[in-house]
Length: 272
Ligand code: G1P
Image (cartoon, rainbow, N blue to C red; front, side, top):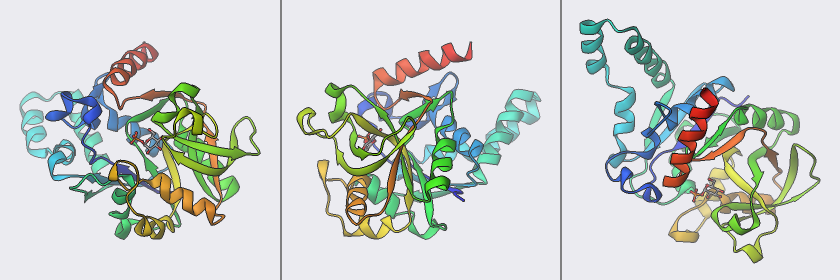
């Protein structure tokens, strides 16, 4: 059973400047709710019991968002507002499930995951990148189902336009059916000509605990960062099985300013 989810939140958010100069992008509201809460809801609905948030000293406001009791208690006492009471209860429920880990230097997703080592309990754990929202159908649930069927690691994937492949980690594959395929290799942000397919990694992973050992051995890759993609690549080389889950939900890219604006519009339309 997969019960733990790691959420890397220490990134600088440069693609979203100037908003992120003072505000963590994961708390920016989409249809009145921080993008991070959509991720938490998806996980809880899929049976996740514990979250490990990787934050940094610059992004302590993420912790504060969940631990602002004084403010809430004062306001609730004064106003007796049901909506605020409900929101406060929800935050308290979330925070009981969160552990915080710090990554003060932006050394990449691989390095971030390594920082969670002491909290990782099971043989497999989830990683969700909050830039990537998937709505309408619970992607984490689909992935856990595939993991249970195949008893192996799973990566969320969707086909993207050939001209856009250099924005993503791209998968090599075999034995594809409508819903999933076996992954035979991965390459981080390839040039169009070098891309082995147009199936991109979207930010949801079910990874084996043994990946920690691989990450430790890695030298920094693209952008001088340690990428999980590179650790996955070397595990696949050693015949560790990975499957790509072609998710059914609708993908919203919240990691760029344009993407964030469009995601807000699309979610608002869905909720009408
Ligand atoms: C990261 C991963 C990449 C993946 C992408 C999904 O890239 O390194 O493999 O395709 O997330 O959003 P980033 O968005 O951090 O540049």
